[in-house]
Length: 425
Ligand code: NAP
Image 1 (spheres, helix red, strand yellow):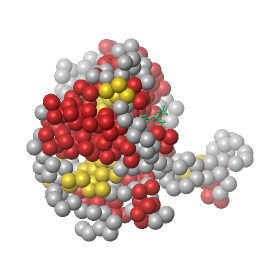
Image 2 (image 1 turned 90 degrees about the vertical axis):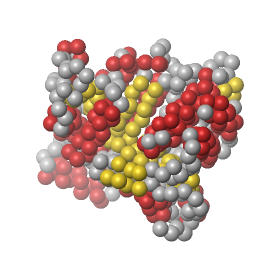
Image 3 (image 1 turned 30 degrees about the vertical axis):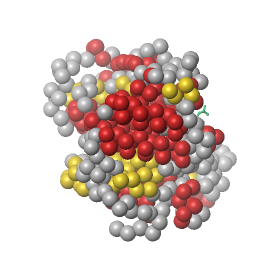
Image 4 (image 1 turned 180 degrees about the vertical axis):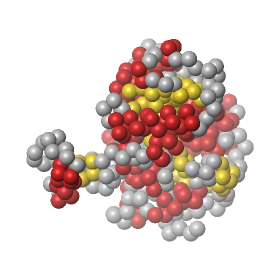
């Protein structure tokens, strides 16, 4: 494919699909990987991450051919004021299957829709996966942050994030209100006066494929438990149904001695449930209770699978327990497709100052390396980051929380990690 604004690297090969349904790709030793630097601090952290990841690939006998693609401000600069997400960018990511992005700014209230949500929906990246684990030396508000080792699977395409909503004062919102009141019979629920309305779709397809991914992950990575987190006691036909469909997957699609769907787990303690030895247990928990258990009984949880909104809140809260947004990585997965991205946003007040912490983006790259089957490069990235932080070399966000730390700029911190990659390889 030829592009107008995107420069295709003169070396490197394409990642090919082997079996889309079963999420299998074939990865050359020199893949072309599209990268969106992003807005705000994206301009600081993405080039730093690119250097660190490139070095780790090289140290394990490979080469990444980066292909810059554009979204957000960088797209408006190149393609014109109205173009936030060029078709070329979407096509390049589709064609090359695996990509990485920095944060993109989303205006609140008016303006364009979230580019992150648009990318996830357009590419059908249905699972947002965030491994949350403690790195030695990182300051944390918890007494025992090392107990945190969770992987959250957040449904990425539906729920109240589907974008089906109507603005107050429009003819459409009044039509929807009238339909709900007069046709559906909810005539004494909504207050009089201006109103905004949104719809919360939760489908069988969306719920089951997410839960399936989480269970497969637990089986592949030797995890003990998958917890389905929802608010089904109140939102019975959406969140509650997510839980029921998820339990159906566990119950019907796997042998009992491999995956055990714990009946009535919503209201029972785990030790009251008889689980076959070595099976992955799938249980349900309510989202509000889960937010406190995550802090008070951290080591009891393992893999979490959730509808979109719960997943957004819970994964940020889990990230805070191990030191905050600057170090929390993430990835969006579809069928034979992955887009790595840090959890944090574009933090505009820190942008362009060589201050921001690139760890989250670097560790998102680690997740990408794992997906490529480059486990050795992924481990090298983690070890080098951990070595750097535990030697006290950190960016401003961590330095202000630890005594005796050495505050480095984004670039200098990335260079310190690169030195450790050289030492460790
Ligand atoms: P944010 O950009 O994540 O930043 C909030 C605060 O977190 C920052 O002010 C900073 O705290 C800290 N922080 C975040 N990333 C950091 C890093 N790499 N290094 C050090 N500190 C970091 O959240 P926001 O201010 O709510 O959102 C800003 C914009 O980003 C919005 O337009 C939002 O929609 C967008 N956003 C995009 C994504 C995405 O692209 N996936 C995700 C979330 C938000 P201190 O001020 O204390 O230093």
